[in-house]
Length: 120
Length: 238
Image 1 (spheres, rainbow over the protein chains, first blue to last red):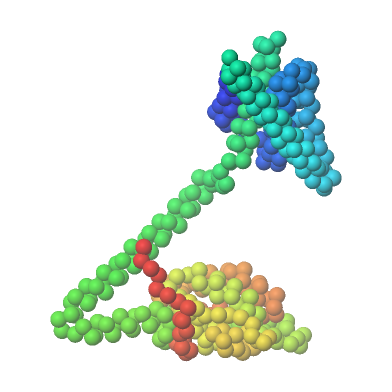
Image 2: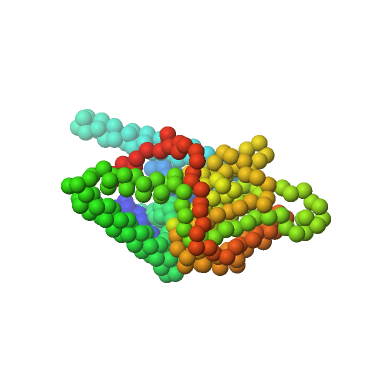
């Protein structure tokens, strides 16, 4: 777990220190990509907690979701329909659901532990 | 197995962190970057220097006035005050001004007369351009058709007639009198106006501009209306 957070810190500091910028026109795509990535991440954590984690699903889902979201946004820009809203909506809803499931699992684990301790 | 999961999560989190940081960088780009090149900065510097020298000369005049007051305070403070009032009135354009200057006549062009076209008034836009062109020179007093141009003078169309200070000007020929302060300045202004592209703009409106030779003595009329300064307030000192 700590190694993963180290990865996050490493990524953030690398991004901030190298001062990479993308053209402002593409900032929309990147924001959607970040959202998709977060969605996949929480999906992965949930799957892991529910013991249904699959390596291939997780990694392929990560890249596929990002590409799909950016592609949808791109298509939306060219068709004049705000399709990126669909992506934001879908990812946003799923993000909340995943986090809710994670919370429940953690709470039930915690109360189970407590019960075990009390019974002892 | 466990190790693999952690490494996957680390990788994904690394990518997420990188993307977030890049997004952060992109969004937080400073609003306006300083893109002036050396030349533009030089120009700005020269503008500021000019302002500096103007302020210095103003300080000089004010010091002079102060000295005058101090000198006069013993015998006649009233006289000094009157002189200041006179100076200020002159600066505001409330007094007649005589001195070296030149006269410019705006007349209907020969072509318009020959072909029998209607002689129209000078349009406000053209007149404003003309006044701005003359105002490039500092320390100039001018009147158009007997109407003195001061700092607050409006030149505009009122009910289809071109007016200055709210009074309509006549149809051409119209006399423009310019007091330039010194003969040297008058010469400069003469040369400048002679070569100015504004004359072509007059020609489009079937008007020709005749810039006369500078004269030693020219009289610019005083501003005849009452100054309406109800919306002006003294600036607060910083």
